Length: 217
Ligand code: DC
Image (cartoon, rainbow, N blue to C red):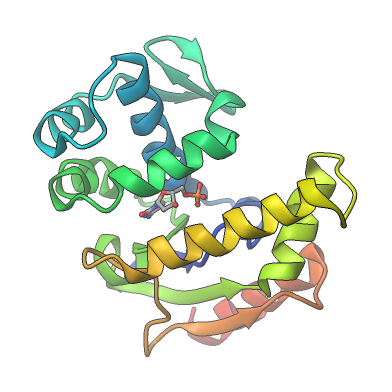
């Protein structure tokens, strides 16, 4: 068993916030694997590489000049922590994440985040492919409506009207893309605990995972 808590789930489920807090409570490291796919997608756009060119994107991913430093995400020494969060980058990340060669190129980099300290990692394939021997696997989700409302609040947008509908539709489209791709599709593993946070606060979700961890530690 690896000293890993794998938290997989759909876009905007809150898994990043929850995973980071669980890591802080345990004194473990936290890996936001989506940020690496996002940074790769941003780099592809910055380098004007065609998003249909799997081979070139995989090469770029292999040598991605990415560093995590003092809570910041640096791409070629530039702080891209907030740029990678925009929806266009998210959509492009979803597109390149469907390429087997890109996933293979990032595999070792993702695994290298595990040290003896322990690691809480979130993503889509953490429990299935990156850390299949994780001590605890969680499938963290919430309804599309609730996830869209959370995203809208983050962006200071009202939870109704055209802008909100766009957010909701983007979330549904990305769920579909991530779940229907042939390579590493998003799905709940048989050995993962389902945690639906639609009616839970962040603190309740964190506590739930810590309680589950106590049962396997
Ligand atoms: O979790 P996120 O929204 O930051 O992820 C961005 C995209 O990256 C998402 O649409 C799917 C992809 N991704 C992936 O395929 N595998 C991961 N382990 C993490 C993210």
